[in-house]
Image (cartoon, rainbow, N blue to C red):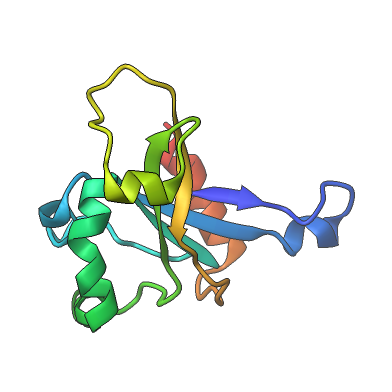
Length: 137
């Protein structure tokens, strides 16, 4: 989870900040494992490999993933996107056509391949900041 204040110069700037939640998934089975996918931020991302993205893309397009989320994770936000790891100087379109194995010794970056629209948050800033602090033990 990440908290990004509008600015750090005022109380209102901090209070207008947004939360972005990240859920790391290694494969399609992990996406549907029932673990995680707790999207409580204004923006939420599944972070995965290009191979996993290619596996779950048809589920996103058909609505299968949205149905799964509403059934198994009804409290989670419906505002989510996908980020994938690609080689540092690579392009997402090139990686989609010819994915680089993660085992290669390279510098990697995360790139948004399915953007997330900013939605509303149902949990308070205090609760989410408390969860962030508690998880850092």
